[in-house]
Length: 219
Image 1 (cartoon, rainbow, N blue to C red):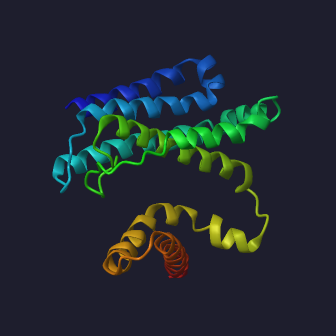
Image 2: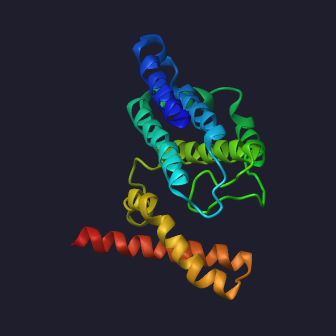
């Protein structure tokens, strides 16, 4: 009940902010803070689920609902976000941006053994690690989103377009399935070293994503 109320409150904030023309036109990147705060406010209601249960599944769906809502907001106000990003690029703060990004990434990449059920987001069970992990998730999503706005809307290379851009949405939807197949059926049974596990998982997932995408779109 509490998590559902947080979800409802987050949607109310999304709606209320858009009623103000001044906020709607100028908030830009600030829209992303709404989702981060909303998700973090759900953490007190996330209980440990080391083996998975229905409650954990429903909680995960509530988290993902905010992710989807944030994606819609980002789409609606992409021009405002792009304008703010351009102003940052043209400012004196631009040279310091890579340093800030590396520092923030270090802060929001928790290394903890206290994990819950691997299929239920967020992964960690301690509330502090959960908050850090959540912020890290948003951090990487937003970095990829901003890079995509800058570089992925133009066909610079046919090969890159065919392999990276065009199957992008399918990769987003399906990648976890292929990652788990490889990890559970190959990496874990033979206790593959970490370096080779990361490399082979990436290569396998990427190849299967591309293959299945063109098989599905060719049907």
